[in-house]
Image 1 (cartoon, rainbow, N blue to C red):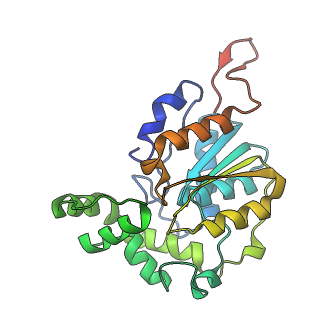
Image 2 (image 1 turned 90 degrees about the horizontal axis):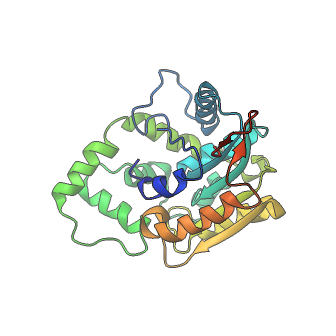
Length: 253
């Protein structure tokens, strides 16, 4: 919820919002061994079916974008539009070997993305923000680590490993849904080249928006600008409400 709190109120006036905790990111969990974004997408879709949602627009930041792209592949008749924010779905395992990222191995990436010390969390903030906050108290950093990075650490490590290991861009299917690719100009987690690569891959089905003076955490650094682009894309060529069989109007999902 803290990732999306600035967007819930304005978007809820036009849309029915469903904001799932992905597996191992909140209170959602599984005893099954699968760790792929394909499996995560299936779990989200089963949840939406439980709520009776038959059409939806999917918005995903970072890892959520991997899950959203997988949902668009698997369920094209349900996912009408897709928004991918700073989500390197078109990365390849060899990109790390070729020096695209700030880290040299998946283990090093895990140590930063799932920090277990204030020093590592400061490193993550430096990579995530164009202008990171300075002089953050160690007590706050420790509390953040306890809440956000310690629980389900092993499972989340396996999620990251599943994203990189043996990943090839040539294996990435093209989706046909209208897609908004939105990226921070100075993203150091998933460099901007991945945004251009994905735009070339999707061609006319996608539009690319680059947010100036922003890093990876566009939802926190530039929430107003991100909301502006979300609103334009989500409502483009769509009615603000849609009638049901009895002629009543309902918000979009």
